[in-house]
Image 1 (cartoon, rainbow, N blue to C red):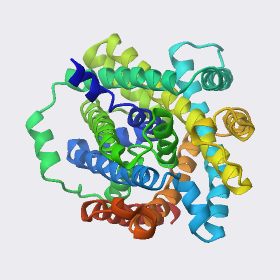
Image 2: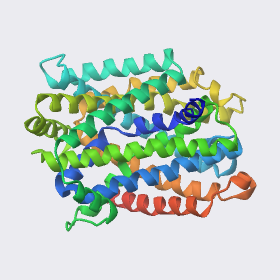
Image 3: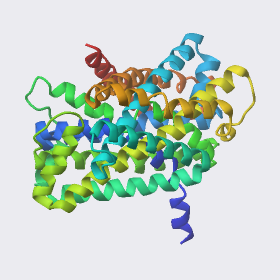
Length: 410
């Protein structure tokens, strides 16, 4: 019993990162891939989880080896333009992503429980309510509460999506073949959609928040790297399985609409013809759980980055664990919760989803390149510097996310 309790103690921050990383854009990307190409594209969801594991393991490695967050390392060791670039990017990314999350949370809640006859108005009201609820949970709660909530959301999403995929009675032999023998569909757009699926699994900027949740968990020494690996390994396995299940559902249900939130509604409607009304409502509840947990994770984790930036530049010795109650943290939380409501008022969800994907594409090659450089510098990471396997994972991440970046901007 004590051994089981010890092993369970290894789980925590990774579940928060995984639940935060599974957002509306990822769900739609996986659904579109499954609807267009069927189960042949399953390997991309698995590869996406592996690459995000490599990146997040790099974030944890730096943190545990140096006692500094990766953001502190950028400010301390790299040219100033890197830090300023990241700050500008963080402000833009946060505004766009917060708007997308508020919009999709509002749409999901308005579908489940209409609060106004006009969909746009109902979406705005529900989005504002849920944004306020996320703020209240962050301010009134603690890391321990967040961890428990995220484990609950992961459980909800996993049960709903896996049971939906199972109910479609798919050919498991074809699924195993698709996972073991990867190939691209014979379609000019297949590369774009596949790279989008790989990039969408597991989040982007929120990977940096793992460092602060590590500190809150009490994992602060190099010996905790194995704990972090186990934690991240379980979390990204669940994330990959979630993406795989969504592709299976889309392949089996064959939705009529192929873009934006309409894709999710069409998928739910098609599921109801196979699994009945319970399947439809269960899938929509699972979608809401995915986008609200993503909102909650972003509202909790991203203000750490801004507060850490202010702390490091001001030279104030504030411990990572004490950043949550600081004024910069709370100001940025307000920036996430209120100004992006303008996006919900004036923008269409499809346009928000595109901008969400483009802003995410800018960050991943930047992170992979800096982790390759910083985690291989012996004077900084010492004996905890990257091994050959970590370097292969980061190099592959850099190449694939660079390709996605150039595809997104052209």
